Image (cartoon, rainbow over all chains, first blue to last red; front, top):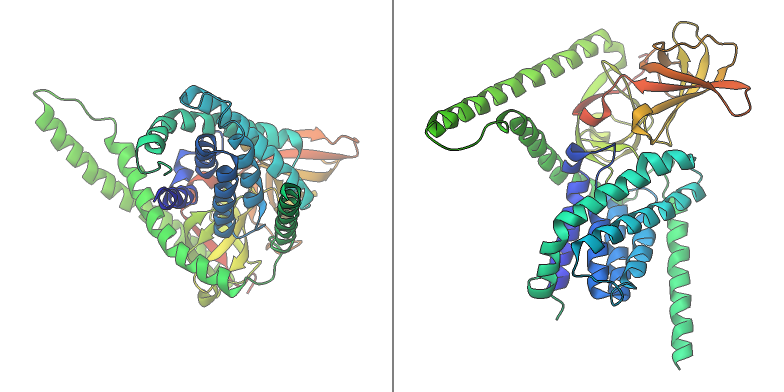
Length: 164
Length: 273
């Protein structure tokens, strides 16, 4: 049941990212809701689950985008795994901790994506990537995590997203 | 036993990563055609995206006007009336704005009848932040083909990079992969305009001759080299600097099109026709 609910959440996040989130652009970036959800899920359920759902969410995003299939699947699977390592080490009840983790996860995943994009032969200057996208997106995603982690955590421990 | 299992896992992960890297290489934006699976998926999703975007436009315009009102007390009834009237004005204003936009597009189309511009609505955007691609509700069934230029009366928007029967993907000129053959309108100095991730200067014009007189405010238009028809306005120069080697100049360009507020665009079906 929880897997179905989480899959639906990822689908909704993707639909919003490709449509309505353009109305809430700040400093030229839209929040990466799929990444934020993967971070939430990985910190609560661990590396294996984080990597799996990162891969699935990323693959769906790749299909919706239609270009460079695998770019998001690979980067989100890696970040899901890495964040999941903090499953037993971090104080995951605190939404402040999660905001910090989300910021770091965003910076890491975007640097990884940037390197993959460079590898695909697309030229973007490092300064442009850092100041134009990576840092603003990190701050934005951290803000989103601050707002939504509490209800997500409540649902993951007592509600529909609770792992049996 | 445990070691064998670990080796198997590492092998499986390596194969998956290898496959994904291969997929990334072969599914870039320079593909000539999409697969049947992708075409069906995009047309299906495009329908849902179109409905959600339409709702979004209505909600945004409604909120803009109604949001400042609120509160309770004796005058709540009157406030409610004002809210309702504001809502009605918002709807009428929305029709007026849509009328103005469509009239501009019609004027442009009439003045450029030879190009056969086709009006298309934006129904979706690339879900990521790295690339600037929008999806429109016109496709191969309406005569849209890959590499057709996409414009607005105010200036150049981008080019078509993928087509399904009912939708098409447009690569915006602000995308880092975009390259446009351009020139400074006054002095006819040629250069190449590319997209930049930094939103304070979404475009950059490179390879300008260092002897060229480049000043702030100069208009940049397409040069006609490449797929874009000649003379389409792109943007205005906002800053100039020498490149690292000092051999050429590079100019930061502010686009004439507001890419955050795109709702309709024109696809040039037959340039110069």
